[in-house]
Image 1 (tube, rainbow, N blue to C red):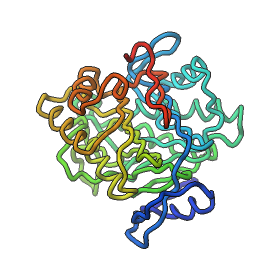
Image 2 (image 1 turned 60 degrees about the horizontal axis):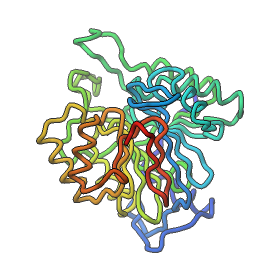
Image 3 (image 1 turned 90 degrees about the vertical axis):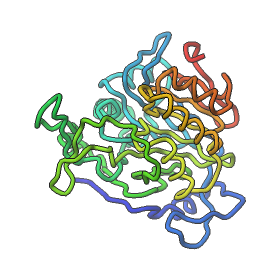
Length: 338
């Protein structure tokens, strides 16, 4: 079985140096806290939503998430959608080429972010034998889970059974226990420190840890950030660790830069007025410049966040299928997302 466990910041600066990419003007502290270094920055970034709850025209929506990240010619897929063929269908409908994808980041183990992975591997390998050679997950991704009220003692983490299948397909599974640069300028956060009490996850699920079944706080929940001169371009799957926790973690452990854009799912669809108000206040204080949130964020919460962050219809929209964020241009929404 091909499986690797990567610690915080391992080989991050070496990857950047080998690639010869552009570097930041100001020196920043490396994730390890050692000597200052210059993190690689992307000059060209485009993020396209391929799976989300809202869709229009010839695309299809689902309760799931997936996005293609392009950074200076490198392609990384963030999550793989809920149904086996949604991402493939929407990519073809949008004329998006996925054969360039070498790395997949899975934000957490939930099936609405992982089910499309195997079909994607099979389809893309037919076009490019080198497609999807690495899958990046957070530490805790393969822990056993139960949902007592729904399925009793049955295992609900489908990724445990699929682990050997992925390895047999020649996919290296890399488990991260901290931030790591997976291609130049593109970082996974690894598991996120929970310094704020954001409880953005289903509380009925149980996870087995140290021989005990405890509330599953989704310890493997992670995000992706692309480092640019203007700051971080951040993607969250469901934000089960909390959007504020995630952004604090990114700035503290990867680079203390502005949050240029925040995208993906924030799991606020059922949040109370108090939680929405607190989240908006914190994100405004952090200074989020663009917001393109969909999936489990909820449409009304997105509008509430737009107001709370002092953004407008140009800088805060629903992340519908086909919506794009282009570095240097901003958000390109679909008609339904306006």
